[in-house]
Length: 235
Image 1 (tube, one colour):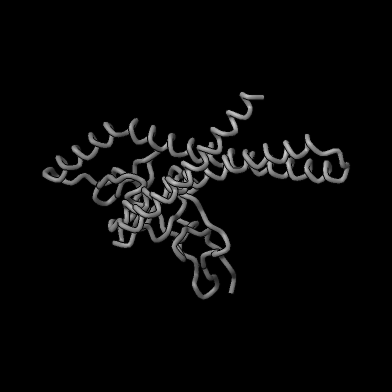
Image 2 (image 1 turned 135 degrees about the vertical axis):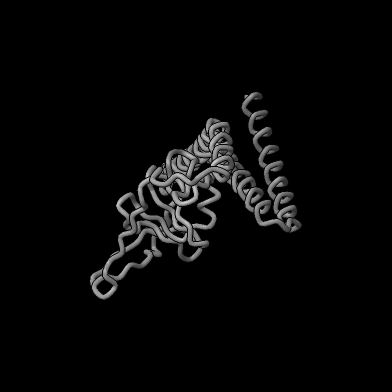
């Protein structure tokens, strides 16, 4: 019994610390000026908020279980059990989301580290190639399939959002704001077929207007601060 109470006190103390950390991060966020720094800190803040919600939910479940043990009324017992099941489902979903998010972040870091040396080599080769005679035909011409605008209309489906993981597909072609196109070779490596310029996935994604598949059909479009799937409608 003493061990259970001690554990509860630890969880309450941790909940208070997480709440204080959340407040501290929010204050730090207000003082930042660089947009990239803000993005990084917002990700950390999101994780702290998620962890605080998990700890609070666990404490609430324990509190309701205590009430359940102390009551003999059948109606109240039924109500407590229903609330416990609902909160346990919530807790499961939150932990599942947290694990998936961490796995995605760790996987991206591993991929970047694995290809760091290879990327440096390709960039060095690119610098040397600029002083040599240009070689053509290294990569096939990038297809661009445009529908007849008199018959078809392409627009972004703003009801759906496409995540970077869904976009990160081998063979996709990225068209950027500076009118350049990059072919996604593998993992984090993209290359401009015209200049042989090499960039990482995140570098290109930050300035991408739309994404096409290997056949040149537009599949994703940047609209309303997010990537959306493209809908084709016959006029």
